[in-house]
Amino acid sequence: MDIADDVPMTRTYDFVVEERAGAPDGVQKRMLVVNGQFPGPTIEANTGDRIVVNVTNKMPNSTAIHWHGLFQRGTNYYDGTVAITQCGIPPGESMVYNFTLDGWVGSTWWHAHAGTQYTDGITGALIVHAKNESVPTYDGDIAIQLADLYHGFSPELLNLYHTPGGLEGTPGNEPVPDGGTINGIGQWGAHNSSFFNATLAPNKTYRLRLINTGSFVAMRFAVDGHTLTVVEADGTAVSPVDVAAVSVAVAQRYSVLLRTNASAGAYWMRAALDQDAFTYDNPGVQTEVRGVLRYGVADDVMPDVALLDNPPSLPDGAPGDLDTDDLVPVGGGPAPDATFSVYFTISMQYAGGPNYLSQFLSFINSTSWEPLQGTSTLFSLRANESIADGSATLADSQLITTVDEPHVVEFIIDNLDDGDHPFHLHGHKFWIVGSGAGRYQNQPLDNKAPMLRDTLVIPAYTYTILRFVADNPGFWAFHCHIQWHMAAGLLFQLNVLPSESAKFDIPQYMLDQCAREGKLM
Image 1 (cartoon, rainbow, N blue to C red):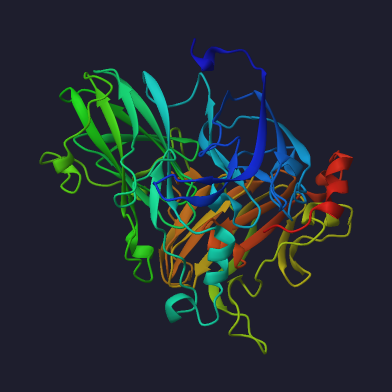
Image 2: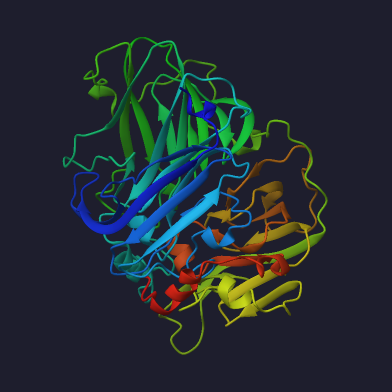
C-alpha cells in the first residue's frame, strides 16, 4: 500500500550515534555515523504523523540532531540546534525528539547541528508524503543524497581552515573536498569501483528526490540520455520545469521526474562537484561521482565505461541546466507586504585585536557567532520577559532579532563577501522577492509569484530580499550552511513571540543536560 494512504500514526526510531571507521569512496577515514551506517536511516512518514526519535550519544563529544526545514511549531526545543534550542546531548546520554509533521510535505533531511559533526557522516533523508501534494503523478520514488566528501576528520580540517594566514596562504580558503558520494558511495581514483545503483521498471515515471547533504559545494546532478522535470524545491511544489541537469546547493532539495522511456539499458548518473568554489588545487580530487540507473535489463548490467569521461549530449532543442529564476510555486502569488524589516551584511574578516592573524571569521553585521557554553539562547532568554522588539547582541557573540507579535518580516541582506553563501532559515519558509548585483539601494522587487523555500544561495557581492511570516514561537537560526562558515560565525538568530515561547513545557532533563554537555568537538 502507498504510504500516503496510511492513517496518521506515530513512527518511532532509535538512533545510536558513534565514531566508526569507514571508506565511502574506498579510502579509510574516521566517521561519525548513526546506527553504523552512512547515510543514516531514512525517515519516511506522512504529514500529520508524529515522529519520535530516541538519540543515544556514544561519541566523546556532545551532539544534537536537526530536522532540516521542519516547522516545529510549538516544539522549537526539538529543533536540534546546539546552543540555540538545546544544549548538546552529553556523551553516554540520550534524548527523545518528539514532534508532529504539521503541514510540511516534501523532501528534506536530518543532520547533526553541533560543530562540524555532520561533515563526518551524521546525515540522513527525511521524506514526508501527502495525498494532496501538488506534483504530477509518478510510479515510484528514490531519495538520492549527494554530498562532497573529505578524507580528513572535520575538527582537524576546521583547524586547518583557521590556520594563521589561511590555507595555502590565503585567509578564508575553505578545505577543498577529496571527492563525493551518491547515497554514501563514491569513487576515488582506483580505490573503489562500487556505485550506487538502482534497477527501475521501463516506461514508468520516477521521482528522484535530490538532497545535498554535503558541507561545502553545490552538486550538479544529471542522468545520461534523460531530460529531468523539476517538480519540487525545499518542500514547495513548483510548476514543472524540464532541465538537462540540476545544481543542488548545500542543504537544498529538488524533486525531479525521470521517465524510463529511452532504450532499455544502463545509464550513468552523475554528481559533479562545483569547482568554482575551490580556492586552491587539491591534486587528487574526484570532481565527479557516478551512480547507475538501469531498466529493461538484468540487475548486473553496467553502462558503457567509455562514456564515463565522455557524457553523451542530449538531442538538439533539449533544455539546459535549471535556472532557479524559472521556479514558480504551484498556486503561488504575491508575498504579503512587510511589516517588520531587518537589514544585515555578510562579511568575512579578521576579528581584530592583538591576535588578529589567528582567526579569520564570518560576520553578520559586526557579530561573529559562537555557541554559548552550558546553555542555549532559548533556555537562557525565554524567562526574560523584558526582551523588546528589535535587534540586540548577547554576550558579544549572539546577534538576535526579537519579534514579539506576528509580523511579515523582511530580511534585506547585502553580501559583501567574494563567495556564495547557501543560507537556511529554521522553522520557516521565505519568499524570495528580490535579488541582484551590488548592494540593495531600493531596486524594484519582483513580487508577482516569488519562490517559497527554506534554503537559497546568496551570490558574492549581491543583495537578496526575503519575506516570511514570523508567527512560530521560539529561537530560529538563519545561517550559512557551509560548515566552515557556520563554525566561523555566520549565524544570526530570530526570537519569535517570546511571550509564547516562555510557556513551552521543556522537559526538565534537557535543562539538566546543560551542566554535563561537555565539548562539542
